[in-house]
Length: 140
Image 1 (cartoon, rainbow, N blue to C red):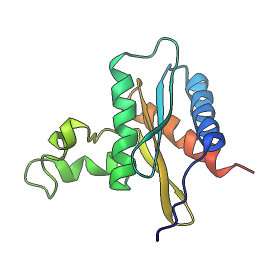
Image 2 (cartoon, rainbow, N blue to C red; image 1 turned 60 degrees about the vertical axis):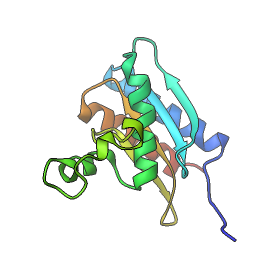
Image 3 (cartoon, one colour; image 1 turned 135 degrees about the vertical axis):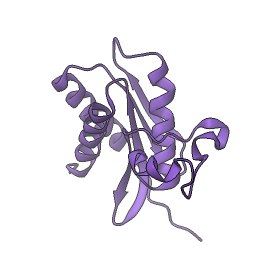
């Protein structure tokens, strides 16, 4: 029998709100997605003015980070032609994303979910995702 640690509703809300606060701070409207450890969507927020394609990108960044247990930007080099996971972005119906903005959420050494953010530059997306993870870590 497996015992699975999973984000709950309060965690999901905290992560979304933490990321949203950072997006407001840097002045970029974002799409923000949170998935559980099995890549299932738990929560999503589209801030006013965020880019329409970013809806899918945010969800898929979160999916990728949860599924691979790695930040999405860590997959970029490995997925280039001639490298170990070349073609990764064409797997799973094209859902795997190797652009910054997807981070796993870890508790006691286990990935329990992930956040995906899109609509800014890769650096902005990563910064907002990091704020969401930090909001989770600061929970009481």
